[in-house]
Amino acid sequence: MMMAKRKMSLTELAERVDITPANLSIFKTGKAKAVRFSTLERLCEVLDCQPADLLEYRPDNEINKETNN
Image 1 (cartoon, rainbow, N blue to C red):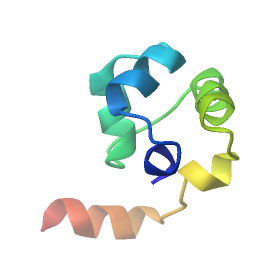
Image 2: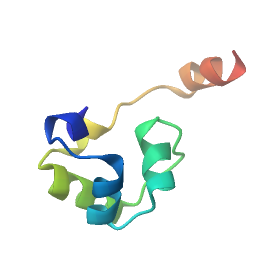
Image 3: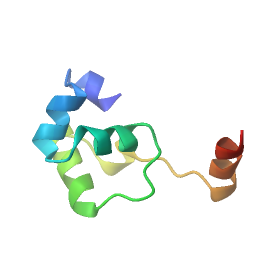
Image 4: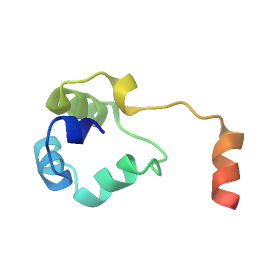
């Protein structure tokens, strides 16, 4: 969503943040198990946003329900 607001492609964002498009895609789809603070900081810097604009808290039991379906 932030990428759409900034009219930026996944490839362009990956280049500007200096991570692979594959890793950015994993983050974008919510499948990332962890993210480095430096990567989060760079994403926020490039997208001109706050971490809360990119992250959402979901309890483990909610995540497990999704992976078991």
